[in-house]
Length: 291
Ligand SMILES: Nc1nc2c(ncn2[C@@H]2O[C@H](COP(=O)(O)OP(=O)(O)OP(=O)(O)O)[C@@H](O)[C@H]2O)c(=O)[nH]1
Ligand SMILES: [Mg+2]
Image 1: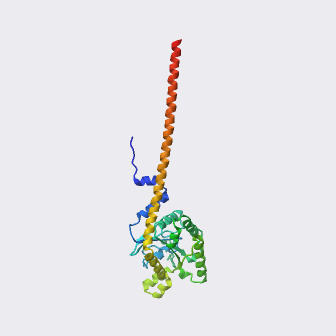
Image 2 (image 1 turned 180 degrees about the vertical axis):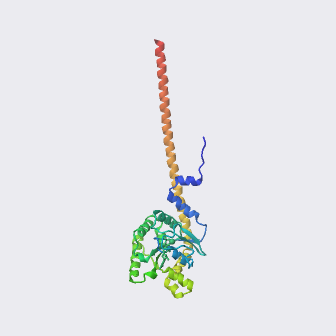
């Protein structure tokens, strides 16, 4: 008999649920860097990539492609001096994109939620995605503590409406997580123009420097906690995988015992039938001999 040995990867694929395996891959495939990983998330055209270009000071949007039609189609990573940025596709395009973003967030240390203030309050898809996090995140309080909430397109919505929208979105987030959050409103093109033309007023009015400062501050104050959370995440994921494997072994052992007991029952039945047959044959021969 030829026993085909399966590779570890194939074994994992066969026995571990896809989402758990994906989470493990996401955590373990990250560059073994002590740098903080920052991932964005939000609807299509929310301004995620442009905001990341501001963080990397790419005034011509060359680090992360931006555009007026669906632009980011798969996550893109960029390593900077003090952190790694992971740009993601819009949540509202396909279910696969949303799932992929959820996994990217699981592997990130800090998340940045990006919402276009021009689109008004959070829509159904954004709320659904956030509700899913509130329901399924291992430690929601850590998520809240490590997430920045940013509204873009401030330059196109500077009217009384923007204050109303700002407050309404903040309330929506508070309702989902039962936690009040601080929100930033930014104007990314203004920041890029200010950088390119060295115009301090534009930079200040973009609000991006204030946001960057808060982000930098968070990275400094949470540095140790981030590493310890990262290890906890890895450990939790490893524990879950081990549990799945142990449960599978227990189930397989039960099946083996069941098969063994069935086979021994069958063996006994066969043996009884054969003994019966021998006995009957013997009796027939005796009867024949006595005639
Ligand atoms: N006026 C203004 N335009 C912005 C701002 N942020 C982004 N944009 C523009 O909005 C469009 C979408 O921006 P992106 O950064 O590509 O949006 P995205 O969320 O990455 O989009 P996808 O990758 O397709 O999901 C681009 O044309 C940007 O130039 C902003 O703060 N103000
Ligand atoms: Mg993009």
